[in-house]
Length: 517
Image 1 (cartoon, rainbow, N blue to C red):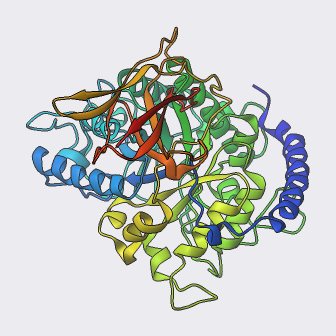
Image 2 (cartoon, rainbow, N blue to C red):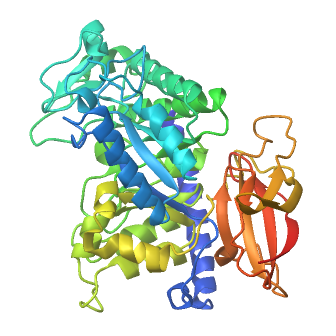
């Protein structure tokens, strides 16, 4: 791998390209009707929500109560049009799934290392439940944190108990030292194990690399630096080099097992504050920084193609003094569009902040307008699921009635796969004892990447143009090879269209059937 310091020239070139593209798209957007006024419903959009364990929301719950809690969340999120769940399965070197590598999480059972009783596997259960609802499931891990501040006891099977020399303590936390090759390799083996054994659609890591800085504290990695400096004389560059190595290794580990599993990162919302004399693209902000404080060179990963999607946590309000949402979403759109860009939205802050131009409403409309008009942005992910489910500030109600009125496919990932599956076979309308149905047969596919995994069903009135870009025509996205038709009196004519989707939702050619309903 090239030395991390060689990234400077690539970064400067990328910045110049981004400046040209942003100018071009600014001119283009000036000629485009405001999508908010058009009530735009995109056919493809990542509509995600995070379900976290680290806040302790599942502590004290029995299996049945937790499953019911998650069922309620998933049902309501489905009604809100959410099509992807990012589910936390590793909080502190532990597991909310059956693992031979790491102990059961205390955030699941109350005590680390204690299996659930009655026994069950939350990750397997969530994969099944999400897929049943037409949602993707992305397994979310915290890569380097080994103990949270609130954890008082680690299991004897925890990696810290086996190799304490590979960790450092910082501000009440234990962390896998990112400067050690053994740690990077181990965490990647955990990721590969999850991807190999579970039918996940994505693998997701959050913004904890080196620890968030605490006042007056230094990261105690002097000995690791001396032993593994690789000729790098600047400690900050060396730390970024370590994280770069990890990100590339993690991507390779995931794709070598299942090349269709999408690797996503949700970095802190600020990459770098604009500074005089800095050659890095910076935003007009004054907060914590990925590049400088967490040693996470996110733009470099995107430009190198090491991540498949990025979800910057732009949780602040429009007009925030230190981290203005408007400034940041424009910045990420301008510089991070080399891979699908998903915006991390904070539900509570959004609905509690007044719109700057119209204080009688909250900031949800303006944030959606920005999300759907700026270049490169292909959806949002909501922090956090429970805030949506309890309809904080009518957020869920407005998703249903306005922004997510239609179903949406996932964004395309052509750099992973751009070959569409074959079209469905033997599509026909059939009367059964249970009603009027469309039936079809799965198309043939030679490899896993070629096979159909789900189907899109469209409906058009007689004489209407068949427009597969019209999201309002989608009546179902299903893994079944059948769809029940809403038969009434048999006098209304419709054309139904069925297409096949592969694992990355490349769409096949259409098959049409005319019916009377």
